[in-house]
Length: 273
Image (tube, rainbow, N blue to C red; front, side, top):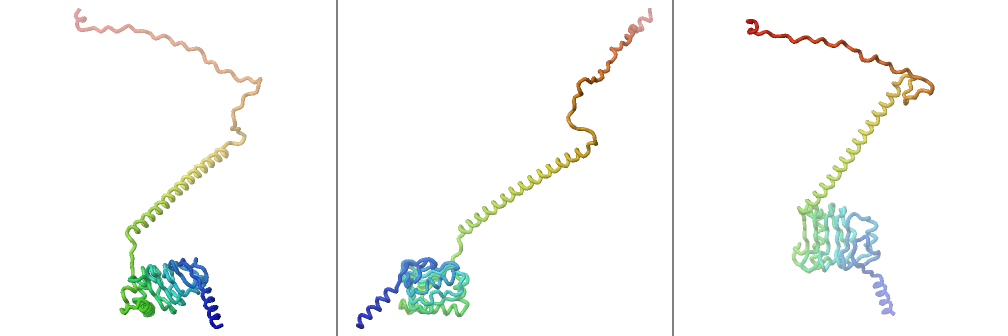
């Protein structure tokens, strides 16, 4: 009877386990007790209530965790987890968390990354600055170091195999690419601004021209005296006569011009005759 009861309890415990493949935490199934195959990823700013509901049953993570680009000051979503391992890389990766200062893994008893590699990696992460300046951050770091040392049966405190701090700078190619993108966008807006300015000026000048023509037409109409018809010319009624054209006298004859004989010029020789 006792053996049967024990078997039932074992079966009940086994049936309560649920193994899930690692994924982005928001896409994780509810009720998972073990994570394997891929890391469990916490990326960006997530709804706290949703995250805690997703991870509340997890006890063992066999594929590591990644915490990337969050605004968290304290990471405590996995404070109930008992084991974190990863046979393919670091057991923990913290990357570009701009406010991270505290790491709370209260129930953790085993922390183990890939053999002869790092157990925990910080890449461009604020925790590195906090670790060097704040006592609480340093204590959190040393607690994890002690757990990893026991997990690997190491003797050396703060072994190089435990942690790695990475501070990567953006490559010049990346900066050049962003500069080109910004230049193209700025050029586009400059061209668009010139185009719309040209349309506005053209429309304004056309409007001014129409206004001037309208004012001129109105002025012409208001300057016409009362009673004068400026319409098209009218033809006279039938039966009316128009005065004949004034006849001019025939060409007036003028007396012919008198001709005078040519004058004779006497030379000194003629005078001697």
